[in-house]
Image 1 (cartoon, rainbow, N blue to C red):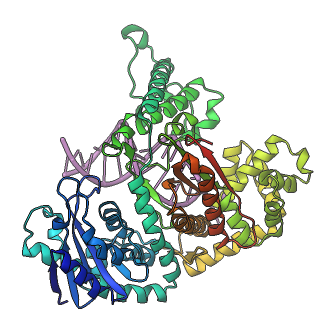
Image 2 (cartoon, rainbow, N blue to C red; image 1 turned 120 degrees about the vertical axis):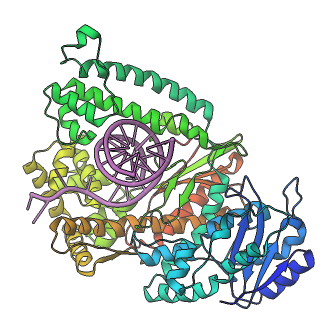
Image 3 (cartoon, rainbow, N blue to C red; image 1 turned 30 degrees about the vertical axis):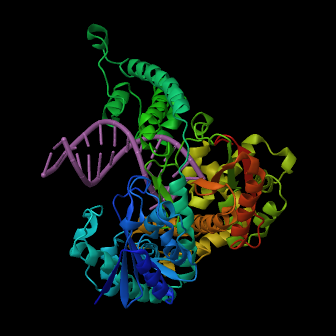
Length: 591
DNA sequence: GTGAAGGGCCAC
DNA sequence: AAACGTGGCCCTTCAC
């Protein structure tokens, strides 16, 4: 691969380079930055390649070293990067988009992301790596030397090695694009690829926006939990050592309550028939009979609150903004779901004591919107079960309607217990629950659980047929797809019944969970375009929920834009079943 | 001391 | 009959 490098260091060079580049439909694109966090460092190089020439633009001369504000002379570059009709091929474009957004003040549009494309093509194969080095090697055979990646990009004079490295990373994007686009089309993944690419800019902005966490409230809540933990720990120690004779002589032998081994040994010592594991749902049936089990579960719950949702989350508050800027992985799971870390804003306890600490800034409001039972609606759409679809069309409470059909009584005569059975079954069905697990979670006998499930599938026979057929297809094709044609390939040993049933459950669940992810991603793009001229800023997403912060004066406008975007996105995929979105204006993240 | 694995539990 | 899907974070344990 020969690379013709042109270094640009002045305003005239920028406008000439951008003029020349603007005649291309597709450009290889990359940036080099002085840090990994756009709030901590600056963007140094922008590299753009049209396949013949690679322009390496040194931005150092264009930034005021004090304010880090770019000069107006970079306008041609902004125009080029934000032009949606000129494709920018980049690897992990979210990274570059954040720097361009924050330091150049421009959106990155026309994104083609080779990182996301590689993930889509690998279709859930966990063995495949997706670094630029590995992706370039896999699709083009080109071997990239990445040793300069971590070099000092802040120094006054960049070395020739650095310039060449920077240029090559942009230049390689074009041959890579040629190979990847062919493969996307062959695998019918070009549609879902567009869905993903359109979602990059919204996510980049969300990470820059951050989510405000009120540290004072958090600490107040934490203090209360600490008191509870101390009390629970004390009482649990007492109960666990009750059977030990020496306890009275030398005081209580201390047990490490966080050690499964020690806790399990102590429980056995008390003569409690603990199952193989001490997982909560396994212990639950024993809680009624043994106070020590109840106390253990109580202790676990507060201990979790202290460890996972304690002081540590406050360390993630960025001093520059006073907010949490978590990392979102756009294809975090093979189903297409997002994952989130540092901190994981998708696993904050539902309890208002925690969620109320996440609030809008001064003069702002939060708009909290979530899809109502989106996975069940997707299942209704896929199964084409008339009773299932009708239950949603009626607009009545879905779990009650399902219970009424199951138990053959009028909806108004459904008891809360019956509704609860239907509700837990509705959720379990999506994951492929079996009778024994259903029995365990409801307390029904195995026999009653089987009968209840039989009734359920008798009522929704179309659903039953769909789940069976879908499972058979998954095993026959060793693959599953969502509504956007996102692909998951399944690997299993056809002689291993456990592997087959696991693959079946996974493959049946994936199109449902994955279509929900498709819908959310579509919604994020529609929303991004709707919010551009408003004060609304995306601050968090949790699988079927979107949270936007905006000026309180604009909250009703933004609320309706958010609701409309979410409904419209779902209607792109779901045609037979009505979509319901609950969008509320609040000062805190609570429902 | 560090890192991986296993168990457990939070979210949807 | 057949162990309910996806993630991340915390803790302990154990190997190096």
